[in-house]
Image (cartoon, rainbow, N blue to C red; front, top):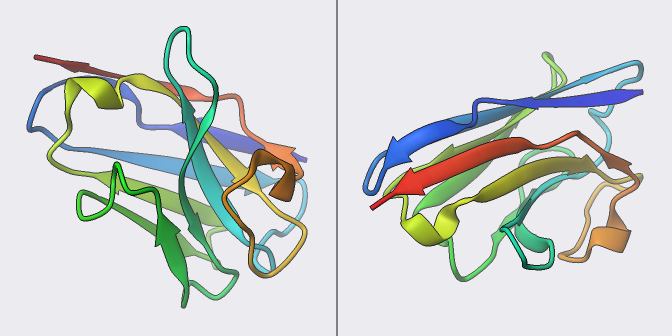
Length: 123
């Protein structure tokens, strides 16, 4: 079972990036997915979550209106579109999958984790 995150990189403030997280080894189409991030010297924090069908999403206040989480169950992939990026968005971004159809904002709601992809936003 693997979650492979990709799409990170270096971008200037105000720019955009799209992260992808592909699952392999099993099908996660029936489970909620989420994105978390961890900045240097800080604890991992919730970014966004999406229900199994994609019909329900929820965002951290810090990214609401700038980030969009989506999923393609046929491709077993979840995405995070990040617009209007700010230097404070710099972090390693992790994708995660729950074992339930909806999941919350806590790391313990998720049981499978990817390896992380680094996003650096320069000012």
